[in-house]
Image 1 (cartoon, rainbow, N blue to C red):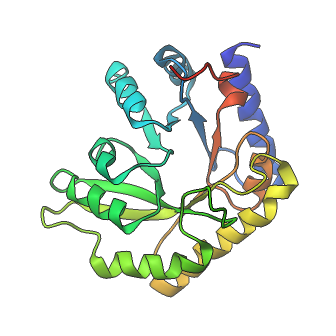
Image 2 (image 1 turned 180 degrees about the vertical axis):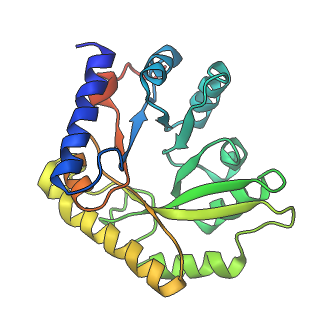
Length: 236
């Protein structure tokens, strides 16, 4: 199966899931996870109409951004970002999916250009797994309160803008086993909006094996890699 055929199959599956959930077709964004895959594949998908691409490793991402600078791609940072790598993220991505510490939030804000806005999602460790990054569900309200109290606008007018939540649940990609965690993420988002008066429209959840369940539970962004690009080549 070609790259185009795989992408079209995922797009058809997404549309079917949207219709099944009573949602408008096209209302959920497909994020093509392109880590380890060449810039030429990204360019091919972009020509087909795929706009959003997710990268896990900042050095690899920045190299691809430079190579594909002439294309109006929306780049997403979806891997963990160390505080000392904040400069590689700030202002270079449409959306940061993995904001999980106050230190990272402050580092990104400090490195944003004047009057720039960096959209970000709070990564929630929805299954409270010690090996995974993110804020525990029980800590998310206190975390957001701390961020808001510290301010999300810099002296130069730059702004870190919270847009929603992201999760990687236990049993990730295993269909119905992931559904309760998607429900929990949506409930946390709703609770944050109510308590703090925030608008948090984005829920980044669902991958190749469970994006249908994620769409049914309110996902606005699904992250799909292998089902689009095929098996990943080994990391160089």
